[in-house]
Image 1 (cartoon, rainbow, N blue to C red):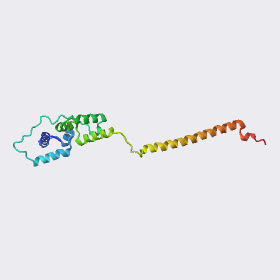
Image 2 (cartoon, helix red, strand yellow):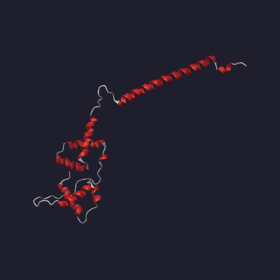
Image 3 (cartoon, rainbow, N blue to C red):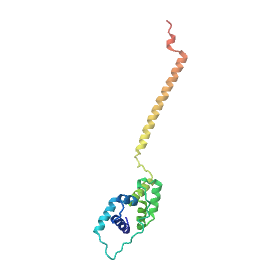
Image 4 (cartoon, helix red, strand yellow):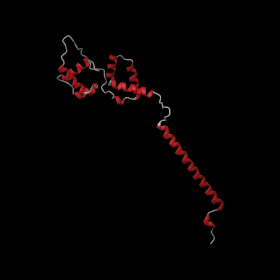
Length: 175
């Protein structure tokens, strides 16, 4: 995922006498500390052939100092990243992913989520969505309660009319 030149430069930085703090370097570049330590460990084991010359970079990368974590990206930014990455070659894709501080798996996950979101919701024949069953049950209960409320209101109206016509029962008693 990272170029050989980038890894070599990071190993040189980490093994130099005036080396920066690994935590600072990790957060600045967006490379996990374990990866940096592994590169240093692997560099001690591997000796490049004399004919192979690894180019050194003048500047480590063109990354911003504070990168957004993938979980901090909003939907619009995710869509733009997926669309931009779709038209890149493998080499360009690697550089793009590093410049954005992403992993290819994260980009693929966003791509899959977008495709899933564009799929129409289908309900197999003969089966209804569980939400529709719940809605029907709630509508049935609402009709039942509306009928009970209407009946209670009608009884109250009749009681008031009966009182208006015949008056209170307590008033009719003459002792």
